[in-house]
Image (tube, rainbow, N blue to C red):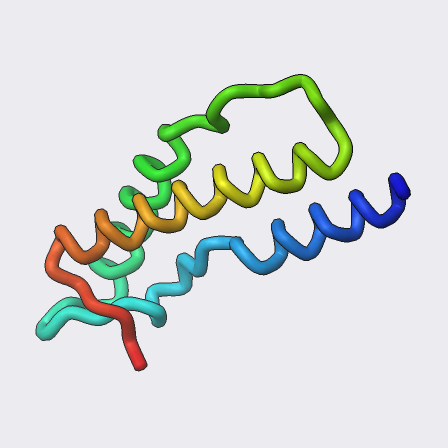
Length: 90
């Protein structure tokens, strides 16, 4: 049971990592360095959201809590990039 929970957490974490290579977002006239800088700033602000409440329940319930946290951070990152005038590269 514990191994299953660890596997689920590992899969969630690898699927939700932010890509800061400067290739996922584009803006007309923006150079690679500018894209990377804005991505880094947006990632920093997204991670400042914090982990949310710790329910002290553990196990599979923490997997759900972590998934919600990463979804909030990913959404904040995307919103920040869009607000800066970037759109996802296809």
